[in-house]
Length: 242
Ligand SMILES: Nc1ncnc2c1ncn2[C@@H]1O[C@H](COP(=O)(O)OP(=O)(O)OP(=O)(O)O)[C@@H](O)[C@H]1O
Image (tube, rainbow, N blue to C red; front, side, top):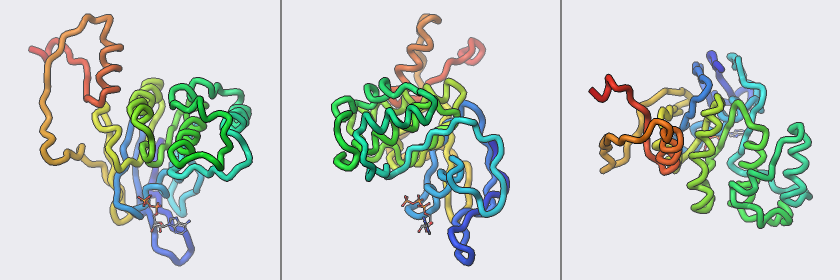
C-alpha cells in the first residue's frame, strides 16, 4: 500500500492537517504512529482506513479487508454487545465474533446494551468488530487506552498474528504498548509531515541482547511467547552467531 503526496484539510480555507505525505506499507508491517495531541494521528488513520478521502494525493494498494478500531467507539446504538457483534458479523460475510469476545475478555458483557458500557468495555467492542473479519489492514486508534491489564497484555500477540498472516497494522499509541514487537516501525507526525523514525527509547531503558538456544521445532512458539511478553526477538543465522 502506498501514500503519494497525501494532504488533508477539514475545510476549504483551513490549514492542511496533513501535508505531502509519502509512505509505503508492506505486508507484515506493524507501525506505531506517534505525535502530539492534535498532530493529525486520527486524521491520518481514518485516511489510511479509507474512511476519509485525501484532499490531494493518492492512496493505492489498500488491502480489501480493513478493520478500524476508533479511539472512541460510538456506543449510542440500541444493540446489546452480542446483538451488535452478530450484526457486524453479517455485514462482514459471517465472520466469527465469538473467539474475539473470549480473547478480549468480554463474554460477561454480551447481554449489556452498548450505551450502558463503560468506556474501556466499549473500546473492546470496537476492537472486536475491527478484528472480526481477519483484516488485511488493521487500523487501531489508541488501542490500549482504558483497557484492563489482561486485555492490554493480550493485544501485542493479537497484532503479531495479524502481521504474521501478511496483514498491515497501524496503531497510534501514546502508551508504547507495542514496543518490543520485532521489526516495529515508528512513524512520527509533526507539523502535518510524516517521518519514519528510529525506535524511541525512554530514559534509563538501555537494551541488552541475550543469546538463547531453543530446539528448532519450538522456535515459533518461543518467539510468540517472548514477543507477547513485550520483548524484541528474532532468529539469527549460524553465521551471525559466529
Ligand atoms: N472534524 C473535524 N473538523 C475540523 N477539524 C478537525 C476535525 N477533526 C480534527 N480536527 C483538527 O485536526 C487536527 C488533527 O486532529 P486529530 O484528531 O487528527 O489529531 P490527533 O493527533 O489524533 O490528536 P489526539 O492525540 O489528541 O487524539 C486538530 O487540529 C483538530 O482540531
